[in-house]
Length: 122
Length: 182
Image (tube, rainbow over all chains, first blue to last red; front, side, top):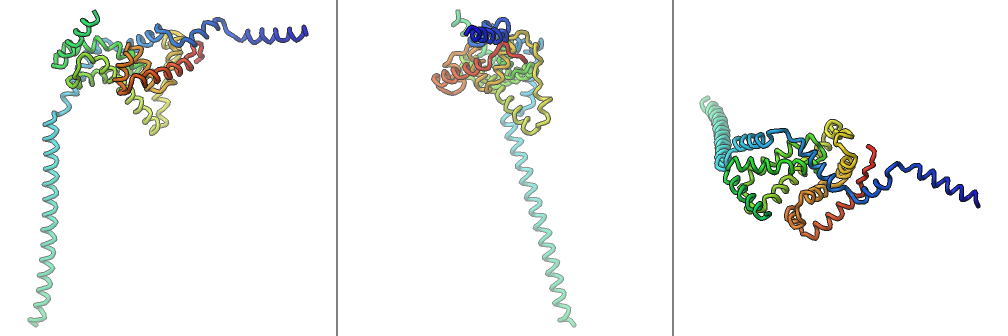
């Protein structure tokens, strides 16, 4: 019986030797979750990443973005101009195709008429 | 005291809305550190902080005239910050799908000890395990936003915010191990 107690005690001693120093504190910290101070450190670390002159850089970038983007009326005008150019191109190519087809057809008819007239003349 | 600072803020926002560059600069200076901290909590990447914070404030300047209630400026600004970070994380995820080999260059973890303490490393590790939406929720609470303000920011009910916050805190605690070995 005594041997069994000793065995249990040595098992406990072995198990507790696996725990690193400060075990109780670590458990309590994990159970409580991150402290407010840790969150503050996290935010401070993020804030420290901004280089000096951040506000000036943002304002310059915002101005550049605003200058690069056309106004609503400007966008509408660009859209309307693009649509007009496309429409003109469609009309031009359509009429050109029609004219070429008509010329081909006319030439075909003229040739046919000439062939019909030739046997009559002979 | 608090109501006078709220009035001052609303006044500053109104001037910034009218295009007063000095007021816009004051707003950026007043909030840059809080927004940067929020961005870092959301992305866990030091190298994203400046770029994303800049995007947030550019959006702020461009959309400021559409803000109807200047007193709601803070909630509105942090909504912009949250949406900007979530968009960035989504884009990053998509890039990982289409450029699988870019992953090792894209997702460089910060070296252990880069951020001071064991607790801070543990918090960063725990936050990284959460969904971006949950991270945003916890970071908004840390920013001092009330449940009602968060509900408005996320376009949901206060009860839903409380439930989600409870779950997010549980998840954070599950992953928060200050003795975590990197």
